[in-house]
Length: 299
Image (cartoon, rainbow, N blue to C red; front, side, top):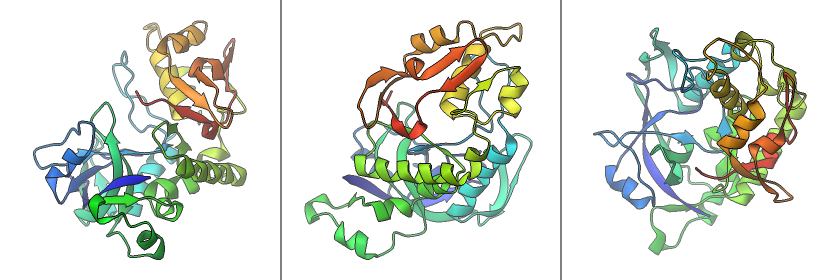
């Protein structure tokens, strides 16, 4: 259960951090060579992170056929982004009309990430942390042998110090698991999501994914419905294929089937695709399996 430890700092001024992603600069720009997949870094070695295991309501998602971004309920989407930056150590964050950060206190914050690979967009899939890695008993117990210098053996206590876990525990984000996430970490994240839902925290207070919803308009999807971001993106992509502004879901099941989001369910291990887990009856949509029981295959 080893991950590459990358020390560095987070930078947001001049960037546009969103609800579950942020720019990170390593102390050693050659560190990305240790990952088995290609990392897309800028000239200074900075990368946009993909925070593992979580997905927040989009603050500015542009479907392929849409002329402008689609937003989600601002309280939760913007709230998740603000909480992420606060957990990393930033305050007094000011953005312009294009959502670029123009100033913050401080300009940069020290931190580190734990990662194993980059996704198809070149973003390191990471657990992110503020400050320096603490010298704790669980960290010492998980210290790798000398031949594995630079690696960290990740334990559940280490996971729980990450901003990923803290956002999930507070209900700011949905659990969205992929197949390369370690099983023991996924189990803890799953139980954390269940507890947040039972307490009605954050997205779970108004979640319409599991009880189901009747889609009445595009404005409702953008501005009102609180649903699993993966499902929102697929609905937005489908609806924007219709340039008349319609909302008919007649072909949505077929669209999902063609998209073929491969996954397996836990604990039964049933291999299938997202379309089989989304019930569509007329204009009514419902996810029939809880999000923490779905594990998507890496694309």
